[in-house]
Amino acid sequence: MVENMLHRYTVFFVACALPLLITGQIAPNMAYQLDFWLMWLLAMVLVGLPVLFAELALSARSAALPWQGIQKLTREADAGMIWRAFAALSVLVAVLLAAGIASRIAVGVAAQFGELVRQAGVPMMAMSAVVMAVALILSLLRVRLLFVGTLLVIFGAMLSLFDSAVSVPLLTEPSLGEWSQAVLLALLSVGAGSGLYWFGSATIANNVMQAKKPLAGYILPIWLTQLIFGALAILAGSAMIGVPSFLVSSVGMLLIAAFLLHYAGVQLVLRFGLLTGVLVLVLLVFALSVVPMQFLVIVVIFISLLAVLCLAIFSGFVMKISHLRKTFNMKTELRYNIWRVLVRIIVPLAVVAALAGVVLELVA
Image 1 (cartoon, helix red, strand yellow):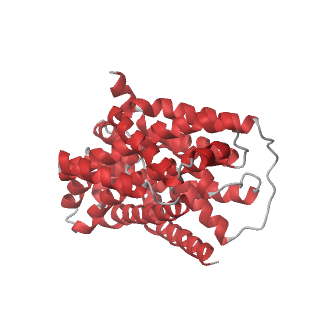
Image 2 (cartoon, one colour):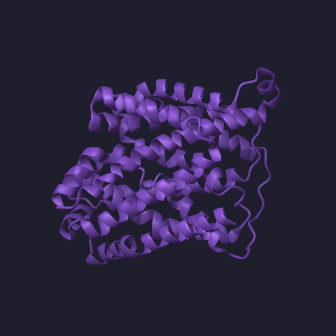
Image 3 (cartoon, helix red, strand yellow):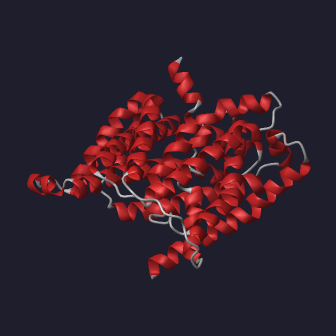
């Protein structure tokens, strides 16, 4: 019964935890720039919200987990096999996020306890691999530790904020790089395109649709949770991280990494069967655990944006209009048309602009 309750609120735990895990890697030290806050809010409305609507609508329509659900939807839409790549991309994103968490913990250990690490002579890659191995073992507990991990990450963020001074943000000159960071934050840090919301809400969203209730009543609270904890994450990303906040956050991050690996494992087992699915997961875990954190962040950005683009194009152009209109059950045709314009035009353009910003930054 407890596990059913936890599964019911999985999407809210994800919406709380992911911004606090990823914001510091995408947009650190941005809390003092008012223009960035405004661009992030704009991106959350114009990009993040339509993508969340798309993912949960597909979840409600399929009433199945992502790998099974995308197969069902492509058959309904008479679409090509290429759109099923979203499921594979979402699994890869989950394992990459878990590997990034392991690498971040290893880097944090070296920063906070540098002398002990040097004396022990433990390589950074070895620490990352050990953290990933522990997360893989904990993933057998499924969603049971996600709630605890989320609370610990929130508590760790609050500890870091208490140790830092918060000042009023100032208006600075906006740039393409800041817009790129704002879009990335509005998508990646909340897990858009990762399939996690689809995974956590397939049955619930379908029940809302079957009851002929507007799906917006289920989606908007999730988006508001993303907004609140995204703001907290931006503030925490500019705060000093002390030993207590690092230790508390690290345990929480480890538990959330275990949930991400559980999600990836479930999808792989559905696709390849138990033995092959577990083997593929183990190989991915240990192959990615030795990749440096800086490279992992870049790979996560590109793979996640590709998954979001795939999701937006599939829901906006490939899915039948009548199917999604019935799924959303919006009160007016205008609301549906606004979403369709956003997911067809604004989201792809914003993703391309974000990719351009990332490439320019890498080149520079």
